[in-house]
Image (cartoon, rainbow, N blue to C red; front, side):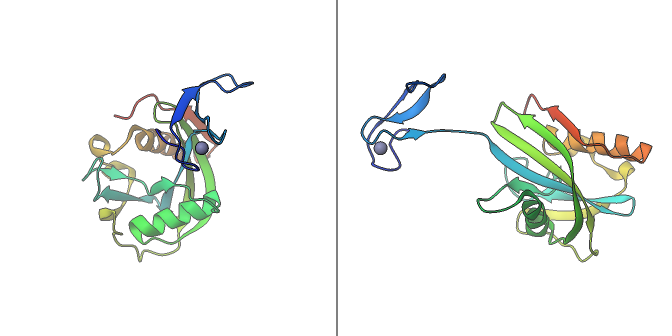
Amino acid sequence: MKYCSYCGAKLSFKIPVGDDRQRFLCEACKTVHYQNPKMVVGCIPEWGDRILMCRRAIQPRHGRWTLPAGYLENGETVSEAAKREAFEEARARLENVTPYALFNLTFVNEVYLMFRANLVDTNFKPGEESLEVKLMVEDEIPWGHIAFPVIRETLVRYFKDRETGYFSFQMGNILRGR
Ligand SMILES: [Zn+2]
């Protein structure tokens, strides 16, 4: 950040009085421009023993496989976001949206919240951001072509839990983007 989004003055980067870390600070209008992590919401859409995967039509990781996920919007609940992303990326409708896993990605200042959900039907098809969408059993998961470590970690934990037949809420830290 270089300029104040309120008054246009040049910003400084220093510790405000009473704070404990550097912030973008406008000396002209006294606004402190806090920067905090973003939340990404995604889901594992289930249909019997299969889950719905999407192949990315966009960068980064064009052509690689992922789960429907994206940034939470203002004014939106996290379960609404999970449903919206599944519809945008796979034209899929979800029900029984249940929280499953939370991951901290401090290296990009993001928090991922992943849900499990049931597909309402199989009338899905690729959305704008997907090349193809496909229901897969565990053996079909393209482990060497997963788009992001956080998605791989979600899937690993999911299939481990599914073996036991019991899903407990998962939490972890992802340390890198590749
Ligand atoms: Zn200002």
